[in-house]
Image 1: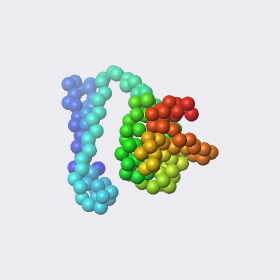
Image 2: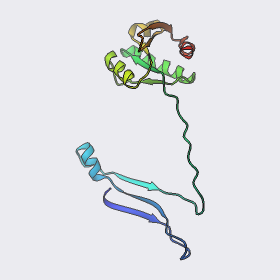
Image 3: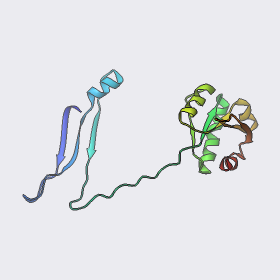
Image 4: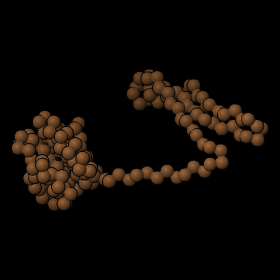
Length: 158
């Protein structure tokens, strides 16, 4: 924090009660100046809630499945169609990584390798027009051409 800092505290009803911090915060002006090289007004606040005599339970998080597939699109038509395919896979509960910001095959493959994803689903301009995709095993480099309609069922078998 920089400059203004604040805390909101409870007022004890009895002398035996202790003061509890309900919220605290401050300004982040210096942080934004370092990060963005210009002064951007920013604040942050943290709310704290604790019931007296209550032991907070450990919060269990739901572990998401790490995707086994990385969707690579090449070209404008493939990028548009990829959104439809990704939605179809989401409905089939098949998690997939995708990067719409990268256009070149090399950059997208590099990201898939970096994330240690075993399979790539590749859609270029030709595949987008034909309604197919290429499913490629990154390690063995074996690939298969699959129709988009058959893709969810095929991915569940590998």
